[in-house]
Image (cartoon, rainbow, N blue to C red; front, side, top):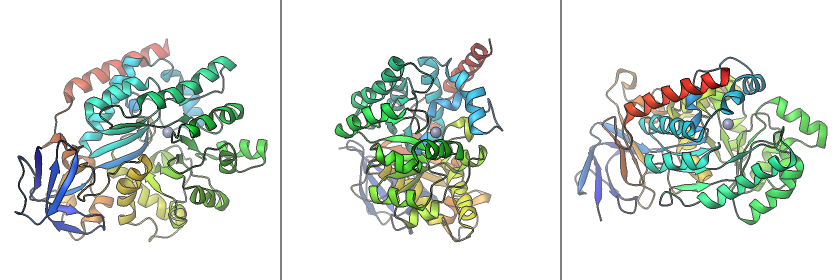
Length: 432
Ligand SMILES: [Zn+2]
């Protein structure tokens, strides 16, 4: 057994207290063995957390990691126009290799900002899986199916591919990869396909991950066509279940919030994307009060425009207060829990807490910056003042993915150069 000692730091415990402690990690099993007072533990190797803060690795509960190639390509438009005029035409040109390069860039960004797990929706998923395997992080992956605008055969192929990808990739990368069945949304996948394939996904016990109630444009057509709120319709076709989670849920009413709570369906809240696309304010405090598990996601880099979960925690707290018209809503401790434990719960992984027996997924932040001084309350700093660039080390599954800001799993400069070249080429192809 090889043991790594994370030493000299303060540790954020599951009850949101902070104490001086060393953390001993079993690198073979990728598990936390012990959290003890300084000086009581010894390991084969040490990771210096001196004067830093050891926190659980952050969980990005909804993203499209390969969309880093489209960062800054199109901004300042509402969702529908942005997708149809800008994003989908370029995405149509993305080759498997582009997706690989974009995923690598996104994963480097995540490792550098303390994220150790992500839930991703995209296509050419085998390329994303290969990048995740190399990055050393955990991921819930899947092929996202869209049936609108396709003929019968094309539509069926796409949904079947989502089922097959979820079956085939589950457990890859030594178990770090899990999978979800992914209808894109309630308006982009036709009812007949949902009625046909969702029961198959449920029978195979595949969790479901889809976009829901992101904008009012997604709500109105469903109410008009079915006479039901979107999540009543989702429940009717079998999409709401424990282990499953919905991205966004901005426009949900009380009936829908109750349905989420009753069925145990989770929510991946994406505050920056919701603000940037002017989609609206999700009722996060009401969801939490109803007992819904709410995690936090960055969404894709094209609508954010970064994958920094520290930004996202701050955004979640700010917009959560505004939505509730209450400054005490979505408090600092709450957003830290959302970005760690709750995200881990959505992904079905035993991470998100620094405790013996949990997965050894953690990040160490440097605290010696002006913007983190003075240290009245480190949980407040995590939610409101820290940024991804404060992360000094990142560890996942017991492996050190970044040590002293040096990413060990990728050649960072080469990844950036490849990403720039591929991004230029794909935009070129799309505009010709
Ligand atoms: Zn999304």
